Length: 257
Image 1 (cartoon, rainbow, N blue to C red):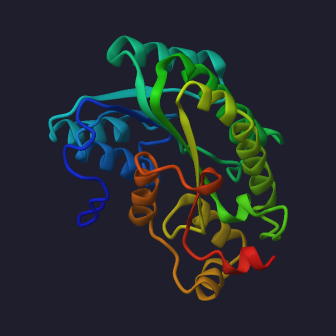
Image 2: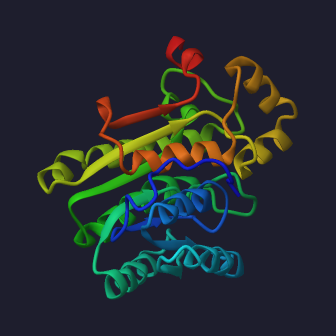
């Protein structure tokens, strides 16, 4: 849990509502926590860890905001529709939608799971949320440098299928920027290097021992979960950057590629 980072001004999001997918733990949990600390009502989305999501909601309600907990499998369109129906009944609309949930390295999943989650589900979540977004709303898509730059810079073999699927998801979302802009809705892509303490980093280290240490040495520093979540939260409120892209951490080796 972040104790010293306060990326958003307290009270600056009072009266606003933010939903973060995959927010029962890790980057998503810290992001939703930062929104609540700024006064936003929040929606905590989880796939299969209800007790952890409820514990976080209890914490955030202690800040004086509303916290709605909704379980949803993002690869199931009916489940996604039900989630947004509940959000509409409770809050009426959304000011910030953070597309944080991703995956593809889990064991026992179908061969097309990474693409189904990292591309198809991201697009479906955005489209399903469309009626709740309004002028001034912000959509944030969370990705990695390894995915964002995959076409010009190779990544670890173990991560390549995930990187390609996340880049496909980013591309599909970017295609919708003009239509969103016509409605006054912004989309920002947040791309970061490997993040210390995430499940992805742990799985990559398990598959390729020493990989994270090597990347840390090359980059000079890797962000931890709380630090990167602070950047994601800021992306929900800061002016839209050039090319709708917020690059977090070292990019020299990727740009050189």
